[in-house]
Amino acid sequence: MRRRIYPGRSAWIDLSGFDLSQANFRQADLRGTNLSQADLSLTHLDGANFFKAVLDGANLAGVFLNGAQFLNCAQLIVTRNWQSAFRDETLDCGAL
Image (cartoon, rainbow, N blue to C red; front, side, top):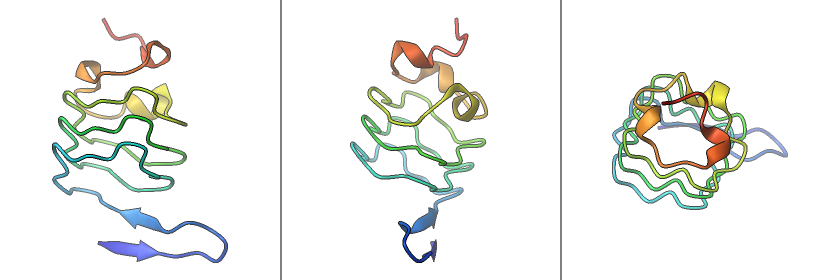
């Protein structure tokens, strides 16, 4: 895992490609975290802060996103299996 620390900012973490399935990240501060291609299936991310988080290609099958902060449709639709994630109505993003 690579950490880049910038003066006056939180650490930005690269978790791209990691298997984080079934982890508990409730209320986690994921600001600026790179989660590209990570397996987040069945992970609890309720209330997590996704400000500037990168989720491209991440697997969100069955993920719990209720109350997620700073998560938007642009971040969500570039992931895999996002339609099966448990999320607030504001993150419907056109899913059937």
